[in-house]
Length: 455
Picture (cartoon, rainbow, N blue to C red):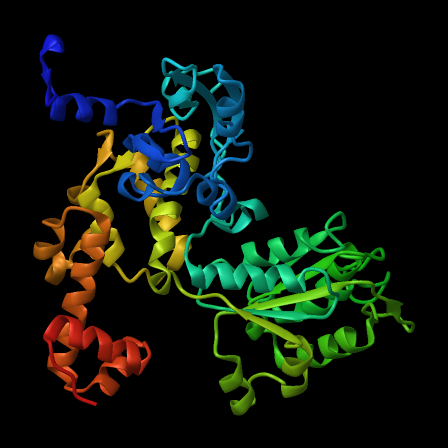
């Protein structure tokens, strides 16, 4: 039946109305196959509606950790309605109610799930209770690592492996890509998780104060030192000391840090004796450390000592599978913080997927918060995006915005990039270099989109 005429609605309109329900609606068959889910799913799991439908249930649970306590197996077993509080992948607390529909033999035919979160609670304003908790992405909790991409999965797996050891580890990546968050993850997944995690921003401490800040000082060590004070090494005792922007460390301090890292002891300013240090060192930089060593801007011996293990965090533009989950994660966070429920239109999401994100996740977080605060409509459209974003993507917008799904949009972007690069460079090798992909992949894409290939 194509129409629900007794409701006065055609099926297309009826489905559109269900898609705009605040509550998430999921329909399963009798064997864990998802037959339908409405668009509310996007703020819970970071997948589009199209991606969720027909996704195997156990992939949803085990591979993507979409819920912390799956409810469906119990409904199939007991054949009765069940309700349960859960936490979704993107951090929302939800109440799930699952109702089985039985056939004439009292076997499960369908299971209907309605999933409600508190995403819009903040929109019912109470001036006495409304609290803004504006947390910077750099201070997020370790469990806030949000990703779907293979690249980031490999990065997190590497971080998990080094978490259980005490050797230094160097985190490399562009500014805003999540180095601080990954450092917290390493600390939280290691033997020192219950001990202090101390962050040192090497770029923010004046050179003349650095030694005292790091190692502390004794009374009378310098003018104004009226009493002894422990430094950041002492505060991190037993735990982790995270040296962020290590590449900004002045050369004179690099020698002193080398001794502390190598010997696991340090000398407070003005003291004649050393202090033993039980500290795990993590360091991070957004610069090319190899070039700094070659130019003499960074000591080679300290670089090798810090680089026992290194983890390179890919920029957001190289892991666009993570963009939509992160987008909804920040929508949830700042929607709660500011008491405003928003969502992005499909076209706005497509435009954001075309942008190169030079500021990486930090730029994305700040953009989402700005839009949540400034856009009065419930839906954030392309017109609401900063001109710096849609102007840089305007060459691709015409074919993209006409695409149906996000996958189709991304394929259109890929096609345009390959065609433009091949027209400019003329060979698969040069296209591979320009787009930073393998030559075999460049050759395959050129054949796909141009039906010809040059070596």
